[in-house]
Each structure stands twice: as structure tokens, then as C-alpha cells.
Length: 295
Image 1 (cartoon, rainbow, N blue to C red):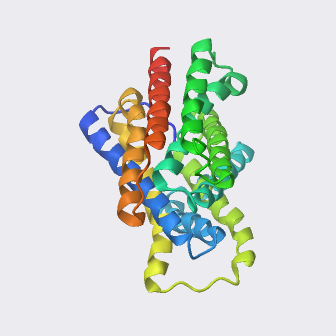
Image 2 (image 1 turned 90 degrees about the vertical axis):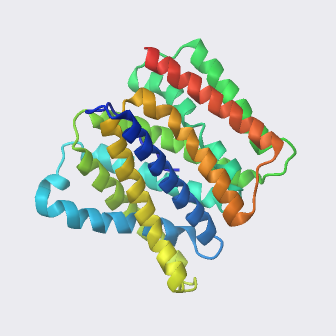
């Protein structure tokens, strides 16, 4: 569950952009599924650290020879660090929440983020938030209630973790908007990986008692960084080939991937109330995106 705001396309090849977007969402679903699987045996702190360390090393090797100091030198370094720290917090909350929740329900709860972004865009960015936006948000949050507590079946703590992750991710997206107009996207991407790796390393001493993974699990741990990095790369490429109006509604395809992977890997299928709640959240998000495109 690691999406970024969609930018305007520089070239228009919408079918290629759609294909790249779907591939990116698949990578993010693989990241979430692998994290959930590994979190049953290893501390979340170790998994988050690996998720950021791999792209930090790869990006440094790929970009530093070409960019040098420009990779990290920026007048807006404070906001870069804050933004990256928020995403690291999101990773801890989402991976920790998914540890005990089914994939479909957990992913659905996270998808209230677009509605939160719409509401926070008013006080944070000065954008106009109408009564319609508030009503859509309330409608979307009714879907959250339907997923989370229709019969008390889901534990409250991981539900709150996922909703907290959604709020933090909304703030991360707003910070990304502020940086987008002035910052080199490669600098922003590298700060995300570097700060995430540094912050998550703080959690490593608490994980010292955990068992060392075998070769298969070690490859899966390393794949967290690969799938996350690949997803962001594919998403950036998708932005270059298709406009935001085409790509934005596709983010909900990740719910389909999450449901399929939850069934294939964990044997979990969502119940009727969870499906109804997910449909409400999706409908609210799509209408909100449509209103944003009309402005």
C-alpha cells in the first residue's frame, strides 16, 4: 500500500500508461502480501528496515555517479526528511496492522486515504473543500465502519493502526504535492529510501532476539525492497504515458490484487459486509476523484 500522487503525462500513450500502472499496483500488493507473510515470524522493524535499505543502496549506486551532491543537496531538506519520515511511519503501521488482519479488509481500510487527502487539502494547501466533499468522506467512512466493526469480528488495535496509517499517508501525499513543483523527483525518491532506512534501523536492537531467516525467507525479506522500488519506478513511468484522469481511478485495482493474494496465500476471502464496505469506499473515492478532475 505505497501509492504516490499522479502527475501530468508528458507523452500520451494511455494504454501503455495503464499497463504500467496495473503492474505497479501488482508490485505494491506483492509487497503487502510478502510483508504480512513474513511478519508472522519476524519483527516488523526488521522487515521495514529491509524494505527501505535495498532501494537506498540501489538508488545510491545508480544515481550518485550521475548526480553527485545534487542527489541530496536541496533547500527544502527539512520537508524532505519530514515527508520520508511519515512514509516510514506508514510502513510500520500498515505492516503491523496487516499482520493480524485479512488482506482484503486491511487494504480496504487503507483506501480511505484519498478522502482524507481531500479534506486536509483545505487547511493544508488552501484548496476549496465543499459540502459535497464532506458528505462523500462521511459516506466513505461508513464503509470503514462496515468493514471494521459490523459484528466485532476484527480486532480493534490493527484496525486503528491501518486508519492511523491512512491519515499519515494523506499527510505524506500533501507534503509530496508541496515538493513536486521545486524538487528533482530523483532527490525526493532517494530521500524516501534513505530516511526510511535510517529511521527503521532504530528498531533493529529490539529485534536482536529474533531468529535468523533461512535462505528462502532471506530472499523474501530482500524482495520487500525490490517490489517496493519496482512499484514506484513503474508508477513514475506510467505517469509519463497517461494523464492523471486515466490513472487515478485505477488505484482501486489494488483491492482486487489484495483479495486474490489473500485467498491464494492465506486462504482468506472477505465476507459480505467487508465487500459492501469496500464498494462504498471505492464509490466515494471515484466520485471524489471525478469532482477533482472537473475543477
